[in-house]
Length: 214
Image 1 (spheres, rainbow, N blue to C red):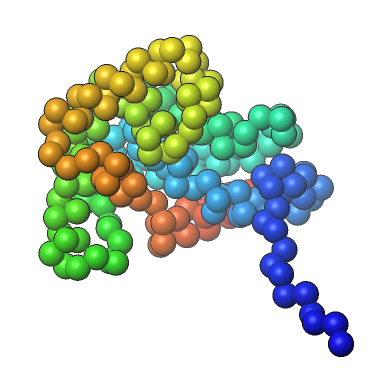
Image 2: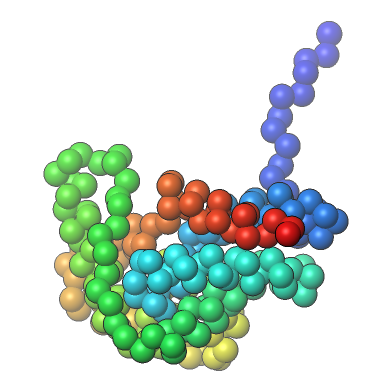
């Protein structure tokens, strides 16, 4: 008797999902939003330095991406493409605002002891403030490389600078933060500007509503 094949089908690639969307299945756009919402938010948050402004930019960036989806070329990374759109949207909004707003408290995961959770939250909030205090050029590179986790070339493409400039700015940004923080950066960076749970679901709902045909 042949055993049933219980192996889970592999996740579709971004390019495969995009092909389904362009074939008319708009609902598949939700896959891309869920998959890349957090890095897109973090990129916007690095530019705008305010949670609500970043969320607004994320929503607009996804709608811009949907409208421009036919221009995406699968030989490129979709993550790089959507991150570039997000940065452009956030930068445009920043030029209009020309004002700085303080950061908000960020919800932290509850998988630690209450004591350690409090310490981690305090350290992460401090790190967020220190990142906000970095010059724009250093801040964007640090976030894209160490938080969004783009590689050097992807970061350079998103920001329109040379690879060597990315390496130099990243070194300076890390050095500036290390001088101000006692905890290792590696332990804190994954907790910066988390965008999951209800916040992610809210943006997903708004984006999907925005792409529905009139």
